[in-house]
Image: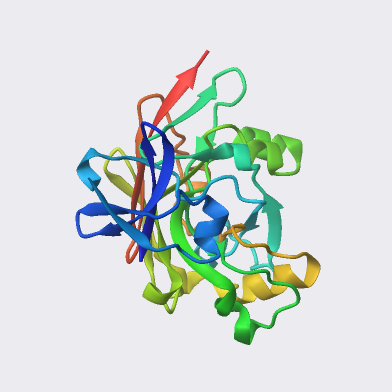
Length: 271
């Protein structure tokens, strides 16, 4: 099932994508009731072409992000792969919708980078789970862009501020339930800026696969329904290119993960 959140005259609503139409769920469910068990569908149908998509994830309890989790990303930096997952967070106020604008003040940052990522949505409470059972706790997957202000990230010597600017976590276009993607380690992933492909890899390059990340995190803290894990980005990000490539005013960024879809956003520099 592909679950979408859309804007309606009466407020946000959740539904399932059926062909080129969206069928709304019964009972006006919120995000957490959707991920703990989607309610039945109604007969109310809205054409996808007529809908304004919102981020399929609505204010999760936490966003757990993983750094340096692709072998090709380590190779482009000429660094050794980490011995255990490197965890940081993005604030939930950074969440942005498909088609939304990624924006930042020029006075705050001048090195805004793109990062194509697979996002994992937790479906049930996970505490001290094993790798063997970890995927049983996944509700679904979506596409993420872990937008990063590199000058803030590196000057702060920790990553939260540079990763958490408002609009810096686009998600979408929809959430694909786990039954449609039984193996999350076989998905081609790429990012294009103004039509130029800059990242082109596969989730098989992950150092710590999804099941390992869930198990590792759950040993330290409880993962709750609706929580998101951003699983890292492959090679090709702007900061490690020669010359470097950073996002500019008016740029169009599209992250695509085969089996899920494409997430597109534009960029704007504000005063």
